[in-house]
Every structure is written in structure tokens, then in C-alpha cells.
Image: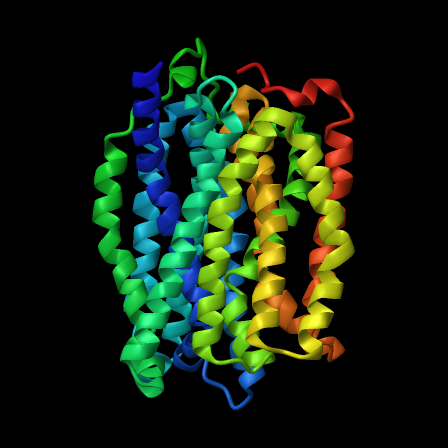
Length: 425
């Protein structure tokens, strides 16, 4: 048992590396949205320029359901290991495109089109990356620790948040504002490209899961798609549950630098420090709450956190914008971090458990990707809500809506006792 646990720890490290890279790329784009706007989407209207940049960010999420369906079927048929290596290669290609494209001043309208293409490729690969990693962790977990194992999928993303925030702080200290705007924002993307060979090397050594190898028959792509259609209800309920976690995550991580600087008018250093603390907080709470869900069940945490978000999201943001400051921003973000991490610690493993085994990766990935199409658009939606209403606390209403969706879906899923256990593992 001890030897198996050590092997599983190594497998966790190998498999979450790609998850780290995926989230790192998404975070960097969100962090430097203003600089990207000036480089690829120049406009006399700063709001229009920034919104175009955030919509391009959101475009990557539109491709996620496509990637979930196509690549999810590939993984469910050919295996977890092969699929995770393929998604990493596609992700690396998209990252390189965003990092290397010349600005609008150099190649005109081709620049934003190439950036959009890179984001779409990133989104296509990311559509199944998270699902593939989560299913892999669920299938290698030791008995009674599935929640703890699955929590490291999201925990690896927090390391990416922290790494990107630290890098942002260092670049802000080393480079002038003009240098950051002109070319410095490209440095984090190029670093992401340099990480790719290392992640690819460690992921190649992954072993296929015993659960997958034990399956006597593997469905073809057509059979997988038909099975997903047959289980459309659980996919949609899973999507509603995931909406809560994606909206809260992108609001407290990717949107924080833009919200802090453009809306609250805080310094760049302050918002990066807050984002770093959020990553640390998430990293602490995620495995703890994943382990807690192994002891008390998934649904108590899911219900409690959706209720907390529904009751507090808008009030705490209203309190923040009434008197913006570093201390208030940090306090609000850490509170929302606790809610997010507690919910997500139970959600990821719950989603692997409610999906039928023959379409576990595809079903998980489709539910997550459909939700992320909306949740990942939180940056653009939040900016639009603020512009529309003139209320800087409006993003809290968006989070409250996501929490309501998660609450309703959780009640519907867990009213059936058989949903409490893994679907015929």
C-alpha cells in the first residue's frame, strides 16, 4: 500500500503539470489584458479596446465544448495517457502563437486574427485537459481518498496563479511601465513556452490507469456521442454545478488585476500581491476540503458553499467598492477564495462520480466546458455589467446567479441516493 501511495504521488505530479501550464497561460492573458488590448486591439475608446481583448479571452472558452466532445471521445476510447499527451501538444502550439504574433502596428488586422486563432487552439485543448486530469486522478486514487486526489487538479492551477502573480511582481519591479506595455507582457508567455518541454517529458512517463485497462469493451466515437446524448440531463446538471466554480475562480484570479487597476484604481503591485495571496489561500483550502468531502460526503459542502456565495457575493463587493483599498480587496478576495476552494474541493470529484463510466471523460469535459464558456467569460461579462449599470459591485450579481445555478443543480443531483457513489468504477 505504501509503495502504491508513493507511485500515485509521482503520478499526480506528472499528470497535473499540463493543468498547471493551461491555467498559467489563461492567467497571464487575463493579467496583461490592458497591454494586449493596446498591442492587438488599438482604439480611441479604451473601454472598447479592453472589451475586445476580454472577448478574445472568452473566445477560447467557446472552443472548449468542441474540444471536450472531440478529444473527450478520443481519451475514452484510446486511453487517458495518450489523450493527455495530445492535449499538451495542442496547448503548446496555441501558447506559442499568442506569444510570438507581432502587434497591430506591424501586420495590421492579421495580428488580432492570429491571436484569436491561438486562443481558439488553447481552448480546444483545454476543453478536455481538466476532465482528463480529473478522471485520471479519480481512477488512481486509493480507497476513501478520491476527493483528496482529485483536489490536486485544481490545486495545480493555484500554483500557476501564484507563479504568474510572482512573475508579474518581478517584471513590474524590473521594467518600466512603457517597457511592460511595449514588450514586457510577452515575457510570461515565452516562459510558458519554455516550460512545455519539461511538462511533455514528465507526462510521457505516465502509466495508463488500471480502471481503463480493466474495461472489457471500449466504445467507439459514435457510441460515445450517442451515450452522451442519452445522458444529457446529468451533463446539463453538471454544467450548472460547475458554473459556480468557474465564475468564482475567474473573478478572484484572472479578473482581479484588471478589476483592481481599471475599476478600483489600485496600484499594479497591490493587485498582484492580492492575487498571489488568493493563489496561496486556494492551494491550502482545496486539498483540505477535498479530504473533508471524503469524510462527510460531497453534497454538504456543495450546498453550504452555494448558499454562502448567494448570500454574500454582492454585499462584500458593495462594501469593497464603497471604499476601495488594498486591505478591503484582500479581505473580500480571501473570503471568496474560501468559498470557491471549499466548493471546488468537493465539486471535481463529484463530477467524476456522477458521470457514467463509459463516457466519464467526455461527459465530465463537456459539462465543465459548457460551464466554462460562461464562467470564463466572466471578465468580459463583469466589465460589461459595470459599464451597463454604472455599479462597480455588479460582478457580485453575476457570481450570485452562478451560485443559484449551482444550488439548484446540487439539490437535483443529490436527491437520488445512488448519486453519492462513483458510477460503477
